[in-house]
Image 1 (cartoon, one colour):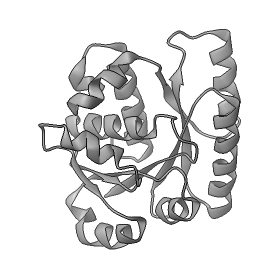
Image 2 (cartoon, rainbow, N blue to C red; image 1 turned 60 degrees about the vertical axis):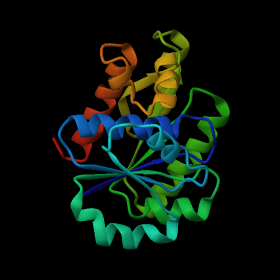
Image 3 (tube, one colour; image 1 turned 120 degrees about the vertical axis):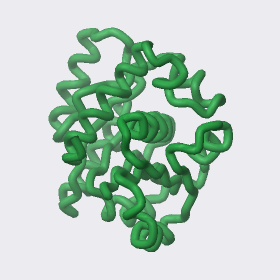
Length: 206
């Protein structure tokens, strides 16, 4: 079992969208995946309730329940993906300490970057392995985006893929789908596959 936590203390960065899409992409790679929704907003669970497919497995928990759940059920899955709470610092700290890799989901904006820097410092202090994933980026590689990518590399390890601002991500959600199911040959699907492969490789699952 590997535990992958998607984290961000600022709302609206695409954390849940990232968690659901990576969970489906890993499932389609042949892995048994559980998506655990720790966020009180329950967005991942809402997505699951709109979904016809029973995979990946999705369950909502409160942070205090996660250690016991992992002990009891973690061995049933190759990968456990955690959608963490955005605004509860104590809960976030408890969750990421259980992760094999914490992924800071951030946007190319000053405010999101400031939060990412804070999270990076906390993870370094506690020895938590982490990487940074840039989301809601411009759909073409502009000079501005290149500068943001270079800035994020200063934070530490950066996922070798970015999620652009594309309508496929939004349109797939109410159908309970990931973009690789909604539009398998689209650019969003390519981004998700690329990011998922990078994360699986980082976890030494491929």
